Length: 307
Image: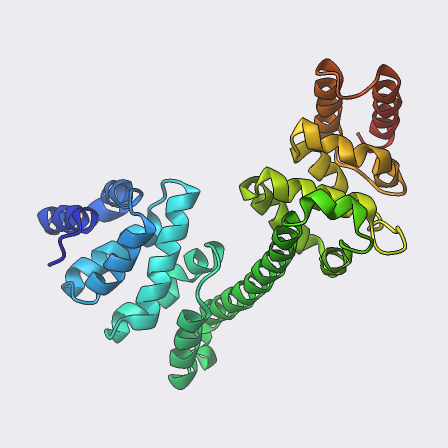
């Protein structure tokens, strides 16, 4: 038995309550299990993977039911979804695998991206046993296929964003000379031009983890455009970046902000955040009154058509 405290706590709770009426695990026991499980770190999950395959199948069955029918929060749900995927790929007990396929395919699909090797293993098992050809399991099998497609797409997005971040990181080494070197931003612009909406949405989630130097270079890349001075067309992301950046950096984007307002719908919430940013800039004297009034007027006009 592992020395991992979290796993021991989980195993102990299931062991002590395994003989309680089976309805217990559907109505309250599952929540108690999830409350223990929510504290698991990534390292705990790695240890749990190793341990679960050695647990008595009775305890595994209980855990599976708790993970299928219990919910605490989204972060914990994603961990539940992952462990169910792992068990579906690795359990030797065919009945339990079929139980997961039948009852947990939704949970697996709705969770975060999964390792492709796990999903490939599951799909190989499905197709080897021709479960995808059995009407009873057909819809569940389709959800596993969809999970794989979603995970492949997520991996593509992560690679794309990491490619951009690595390029931006390399440019931070030339921060002092950035404004003096023609075309220094071209590689970053080329990467950004391949971004689709999904890529930009993921980048939005990732940017709070970037350093101020990286954010400043990204802002300058957006502001300078390509070698011909062309900015990214109709880029909704420009306004989001303006809001996210520290005020000392966000003013870099103001000179080219008018491109952002041309020929596109803009979310009301973002317009409101941009106005708040302008209020902060004027309050801390980063911009002149006439600049503040100009952009406030632009936002007010846009709000009339978008809100």
